[in-house]
Every structure is written in structure tokens, then in C-alpha cells.
Amino acid sequence: MTRQGWSAQKIALALYPFGAGAAAINVFFASLIFSWLGGPVLSTAWSIGLGCVIGVPATWYFARHIRALMDMADAGSDPAGD
Image 1: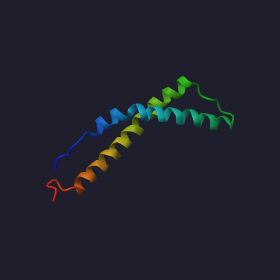
Image 2: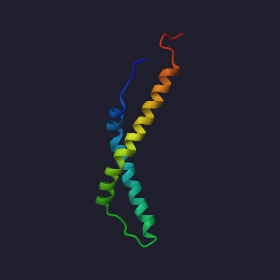
Image 3: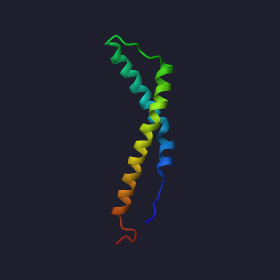
Image 4: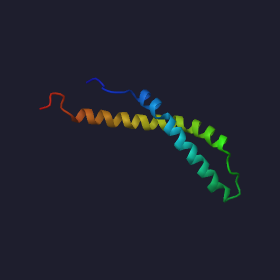
């Protein structure tokens, strides 16, 4: 059976801006929580930079998960429509 639809790489490239943005927000909020223990609060630039770095593997794993779900959905469907 051949794979239909986008590859995991295409999915990851399409979703990377969202993954990096979510990671940046999480990094910033984690620095706010860490500040309760005496740590520094990260600036916007540091949060975005770390979010872009952390967003790469996070988006890659999410894209692979989505691709696996697409493959499972295709395996369960009958191409003849019977």
C-alpha cells in the first residue's frame, strides 16, 4: 500500500510556526514560575529564541504522530468503497 497525503516533513514544516510559538509561550511562563524560586524572568527575545529551538523536535514528533494517525485511518478505509 502506498502512502497518501503529506509526508511527515511537509506536515512539520506547515506546523512549525505554531509549534515554535507554543514553545515560546511555554518557555516564558516557565520562567515566570521559576522566578518564584529566585530565577530570572526571560525577555521576549530569549523566550522566542528558545521557543524556536525547542519547537523543532516538538513539531517533528507531533508531525510524526499526525502521519501515523493518517496511516491508521487509511488502513481502516476500503479503497473500493465496499
